[in-house]
Length: 172
Image (tube, rainbow, N blue to C red; front, top):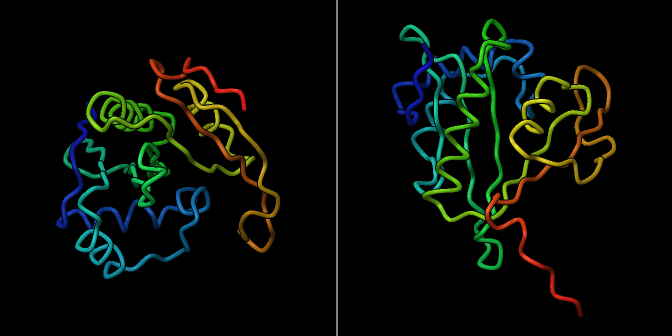
């Protein structure tokens, strides 16, 4: 069974191992060979308004997902989302559990209207997961990142809060 909880500083070594997985860092903007010190610093200096969750299976961290709240006043209704699941746990419900909990927090506790993310266009499993939870592709970012010796495209995806998505746009 997968257990979801807030990340703790003591999770640094296990998060470092998750992002050392070839498929995990290749699916994110992380670099290969993450250091333990980088993860310790990231967890120690995390913005307290942001949320980082971890997925635990049999006592081991197997994935993480985070919400980063926008700092600009006029975009305080928005957060960006990031995720990573260990290669050996993809397709086993970890991403679904993490994303479901982040959306529960976003929709019911954080008063967020819009969630944004970017995903590589060839990451079909992640795109399927995001669409399952109501994210839409809003555009393609050409040559968005350099990965494995070449430039790759990403989709910009977003989701509006389901109860607020019907807000009519004002005509100008």
